[in-house]
Length: 309
Image 1: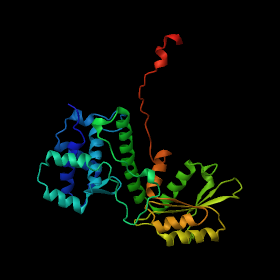
Image 2: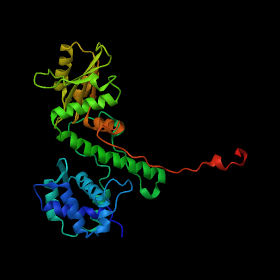
Image 3: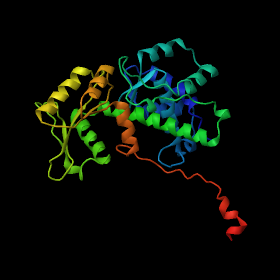
Image 4: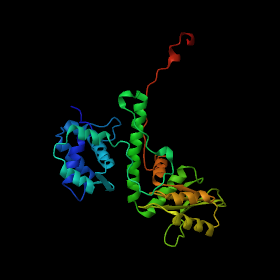
């Protein structure tokens, strides 16, 4: 018997988290869901096609992803899940078992919901905003595959952002420099130096674009909960002027206000990277993530051409 689909894990995850208002490690939730669904030893040992994870743990994770997108749960720290106040209220009001149409609503109704951004945040990358999903019944296999890849990227992006917000400020500065190096800045990793600390004047890192260090890019890397506004950008611009620098990159886990974006566009040499752009750069250049290759067969019509022989 195969492992139940991820939608069947939604209610077990919700009900168990409701009994743990202070939150609980992810593995405890996975085991509780498996017990609730009475999975056999064989089902618990089944692996996802890549062989990297038990299927039931993977599907528990997707169930929790849906609860997060519905605003009912959260990941306040790495490997730890907790219902939001809205989620606790929902669990108390919804009698068990959840109706089938309600499970379906939670499973597919929030697929394109972006995880929370501050109300005054402005988008840096319009192309990264969620596109509407098509009815899977009318999609071609290629379209369904593209939709699945997008869904996987969105989920990993959310997990990456959660983890970035939980690391120490010093570790975040190192991660940012790693990303910039993978983007091609600096001939070697040693050409990117972390200089953050008290009295850093708003500069957290320096990139030498040439071996003699004649051309430099200055970096500010900040974990923010709210939006970054114009005053923070003006202070960074002042720090660049103090270094007689022509180029600077401001990177945050949060977002920027429209006023901050307008200021950056009004001056020379400042590039902004928000949390959404940062996690997509990390995925594209495999910083803190790994990827797997999927082989998709396609008919080679030339092979069957009689004239080719």
